[in-house]
Length: 79
Image 1 (tube, helix red, strand yellow):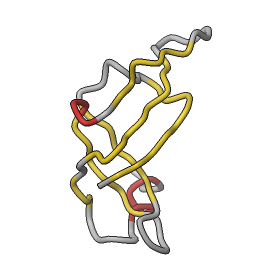
Image 2 (cartoon, one colour; image 1 turned 30 degrees about the vertical axis):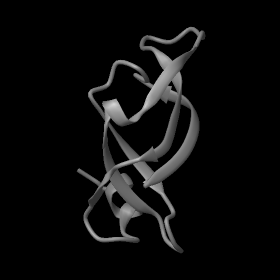
Image 3 (spheres, helix red, strand yellow; image 1 turned 90 degrees about the horizontal axis):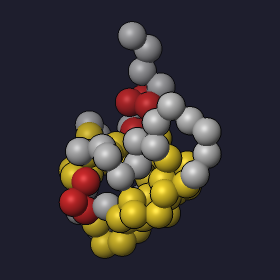
Image 4 (cartoon, helix red, strand yellow; image 1 turned 180 degrees about the vertical axis):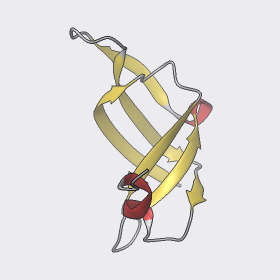
């Protein structure tokens, strides 16, 4: 279960899914979270080419991407 509160999330509220980076223990892990598990109803009004929102997950289910503690490798992957 994920309990996360993040501000200034690009495409918040219109995305079909989110990739969340969270430290469940000591290292950061990456999780795939369906948009139905996310509260992105709080829009942030700024000048941007896409919507921004505050994203809240409370007791949300997420699927671990890769191995636990290896999330930074996904976020910093080079093409």
